[in-house]
Every structure is written in C-alpha cells, then in structure tokens.
Length: 233
Ligand code: FES
Image (tube, rainbow, N blue to C red; front, side, top):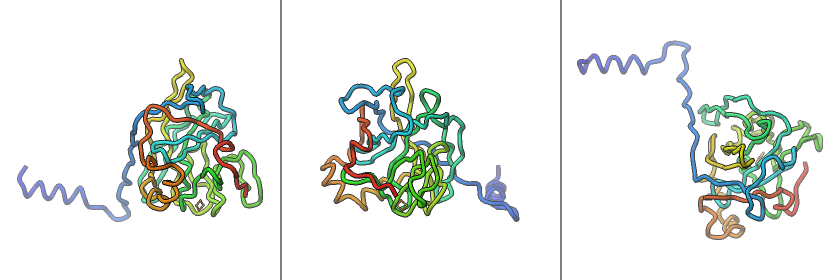
C-alpha cells in the first residue's frame, strides 16, 4: 500500500461517525503467583466446608491486601459484564466450586479504600439487612459511606458512592481435592493507592513484608477471628 493510502486508511479507521462512541477498552485478568488456600493451620482448605453466608478473609496478591471469600449458598454461575470507573469493561466469569457458589473479592472498598484491619472492620458481607442504612440483603456493605456491592454479580455497585466494582480474585477449583487456588485479579486494582494511603499503618500491622507477593499458599480465616470488632451499620 502506498504511504498516502495507508495514512488515509488510518484516518478513516480512527474517525467516529456522528452518534458513534469510542469502543470501551477491555480490561484483561492480571495473573499473580498461584496460591493454594489453606485453613489457619496450613492444611489445604476444603471448599465444601465453607459455611454459606459467613465472611472468610484471606490475603492476596500481597501480604497486606485482604480479600473476602464467600459461599453465597446459591449459584453465581452467569458471567456478568462490568465497567470500571474509567470506562474499561471486563467480564466476570461467575462463581466456582460446589454449586458455583464460591466467590472472592478484594476487601478494599472501591470508594475510599476502607478495609478490614485487625482492630475493626467497617466492611463485610451481610445476608440480611442490619439497619435502615443497610437495607439490601446479600450485599457486601461498607459502613463508611454505605457503598454496596452484589457478590453474586461480580461485586457490581448496587448502592452508595463507589464508582466501580470490587476487583474479583480469580479462583481455580480442584474438584478431586475440593481445593481452591487464587491465581489473579480481575477488575480495576487499587493496590498502589492503597499502599500509598495506608502504608504507615500497614507497616505497623504487617511489618516490612507488607508488599511481598503471596506465593504458594495463603490462609483463610473467619472475619470474626481476624478483627476484634465489626461495625454493623
Ligand atoms: S470507603 Fe466504603 S463507602 Fe466510602
């Protein structure tokens, strides 16, 4: 192709007709080290023993980045198309494990990054309404400014000021061993901003290895065992 024709073809491909919108960018999964989920004692976690509706917590992909693991008690098998705050799109693949009811998400609120600490947690999954401020059942609710996320549809925002879903943690289910392995994230990560904003406190709580990437295994504990106090707004 002549240079002049080539430039004309590029110009035509990069021009929108009236009423057309630029196609949204597609966000790809981000893969980290594979990490087998274990119980608090280090034994492989048995997925079928996770109690429906209970808040479980593990850390991934960094030592200091908490995530929720939930058994929704119902299938969450349908893929969902989601959009980040900057307009990128991605497709959440659905739940995994027995009944496709298991899901995992970053526990760092997508609004102002409230997260569960060892002292207190303002964010958790609730099967039932706990107050007029938290009237939707079956949502991850952040009591800071009441953002709500639906874990059955990729943690899309269903209430409050958050501008995007909680990033999903990608899990692989091993049916033969009833085990779970975290392999990556899907969605707009906030980890750099999180370390920047809370670095001082995270260093106190997690030590100098707070930004170390989790590898091989990560322990799952109940949120109640991890946090001294849970705020139920
Ligand atoms: S930090 Fe969670 S709603 Fe504002």
